[in-house]
Length: 79
Image (cartoon, rainbow, N blue to C red; front, side, top):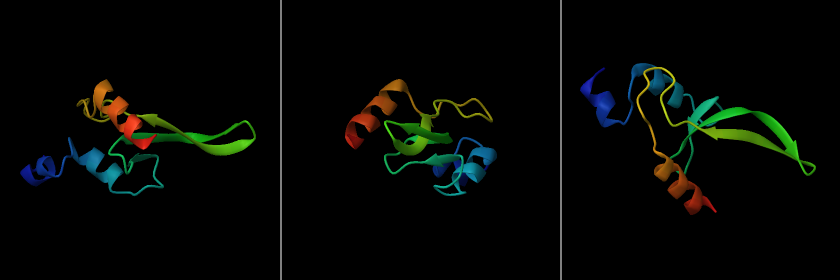
């Protein structure tokens, strides 16, 4: 991994590639700063939406990306 990748906040090249794909990708960085997995579409109470799951560890190298506290704080800020 290059030093400039670490400075950009990427744990590995694969994560950088995924997060560079944009908000329509399966794995993306939300405006709140959370890294989320778009697990598909869902319908609840007659409304459709995306099922988003927070990603705590990099699926490629295993590095912890965000703690439970980070996730809770970001979710509170969005509400």
